[in-house]
Length: 310
Image 1: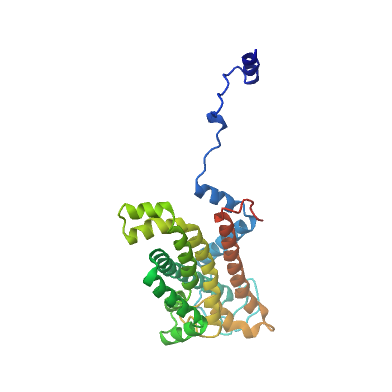
Image 2 (image 1 turned 30 degrees about the horizontal axis):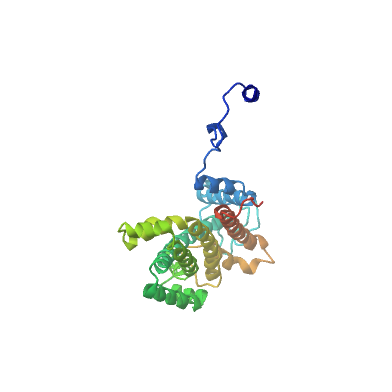
């Protein structure tokens, strides 16, 4: 009788024995990457920021192909007010302000990405080897990191950029030389923790060398921390470059940047505000977008973060 009742409840299918679970009842397995991507996609502010940053990038790359005025063209009247032909007016030397912003945004993004990639690479390598090897190597790298941390980064960067000229790549390399330390400290702490895990001990026991253990086992398991810090480094680089260029110690002609465009037009903030607030708003939007993307990535990679923040 019990078997008949059970059969009726299960639609005629044989009952599942105790201790066993049917395949249909098992949840669909998800990889760690899929879970991170799902949490990031559900972070509304981060997704809005991704869209904003993509829009700015696409406009910056594609619009110069169709915009009728060149960045180099200085044949227009000085300080022309906004018109249909010049939506943001012209500068003191007779250049179209929209073309100035487009060119400056291109250079600012290139510099920021270069700084983030180079600085993150240096910080990850130093931090991973210091945390894994310990001893003298850890002490030496830690002391070098502390030395760079106590140096005023903006002042030192301004001096070096002044000495080695102000080409955009010089600015990028100099800024990267003073932005790897936070990444190195965070990576070192995580490498020290991971070095005690069983899979690292197994790699050591199998005869893997130091370089293989660091790059094959340690670094891939720190990809979340590395990604978040690299994203935030982009925002820091944008602002650092803008600060250098604003005080006249950053990018030099013929190169340009948003900071340089702002520096050249900040005196017009009251009389001709469109010349100042045009590049300033773009700079703020880029910085905020990247910071919000970093927040979304941090929440997505955090295993303790179960609910997605708006």
